[in-house]
Image (cartoon, rainbow, N blue to C red; front, side):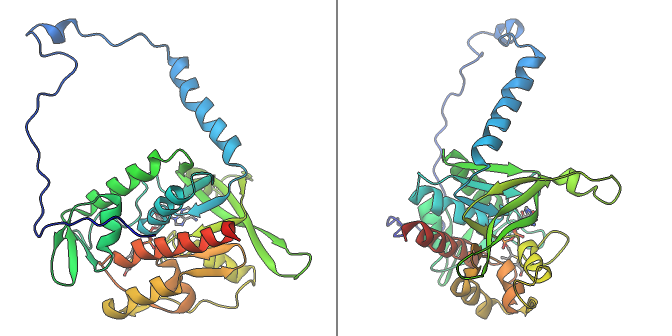
Length: 306
Ligand code: AHZ
C-alpha cells in the first residue's frame, strides 16, 4: 500500500477556528425550557439494538476474515484490509468492552505515543497528526491514535466489531488432500459468559466460519497470546518460544518482518508473535504494531488474490 504523501510540519498542531455550534437551542433564553425529544417506547429501543445485532450475527456467521483482538495491531490490519477490499466481510472479535488493547496510553501511565519512522506513513494514511523528531514521531495522546483509527475502522461498511466477545477456541479442519490441520474459523462467547465457565454449568458457545483468521491477541497475560497457546495444546505447533526481554531497537523490526501465516488459515501479528518466536518485546513504541498490522493485512490479501 502506498500512503498518500502528506507533509506534516514539526510540532504540528491542527488549527481550530471558533465556530458557532448548535442546532438545538440558544436562539433565545427560553429555548431549553421548551426543549423536548421525539417520542420513543422502550421496546422500540430494544428492537433497534437487537434486530441489528442478530442481523450482524447472521451476516457474519460466514465471514471472509476474522480478526481476533482489536488492539493497535488488529485495528491497523482491519483498516488496511477493509480499505483495500470493500467486498470482504471482516469480523473483529474483541474480548474487552473497550476496543484498543494497550494503545490508550503511550506507556506506563503516560499519554504521548511514540512511533519510530517509517511508521509515520501509517499515521499520514489514517490522518493522525504528530510531532516530528529525527528518527521518530510523537502523537500527543495515544488515545488520539486509537480513537481516530477505531473511528475509521468502524465506518467501513464491510467491518463488524463484536466487542465484549471472547474467542474461546479455533475451528479446525484436516485438509483431505494434504492431511494438514487448517484453521477455519473461531468459537466465540460473550466475555461475561467466558468468565463464568468455572461456576456455571455448560454454556455452549457460538461460531464464525472464515477461510482466514488473523490473531492479534497480544503477548501472554490474563487474556493474551490466545491463539498461539491453543495451537500448542492442539499440537499444531510443538511449543512456544516465549516472549523475551525488552530490546526496543531489535524487537520492532523482528515483529514486522515475521508477521506471517503460522499454521494454514491462521495469520499471527503484533505481540502475539513474540510468544511464537521467542522474540523480544519493544516496550512503549508502537510503530511495529501498525506495520505488523499492515503486513498481516497483505498476507490476508494474498489468500484472496490467489
Ligand atoms: O482484549 C485483548 C486486546 O484488546 C484482545 N484479546 C486477547 N485475547 C482475546 C480473545 N478473544 C478476543 N481470546 C482477545 N480478544 O486482544 C487485544 C490485544 O491487544 P494488545 O494491545 O495487547 O496487543 P497488540 O499486539 O495489538 O499490541 C501490543 C502493544 C505492545 S505490548 C509491548 C510490550 O509489552 O513490550 N509493547 C507494545 C507496543
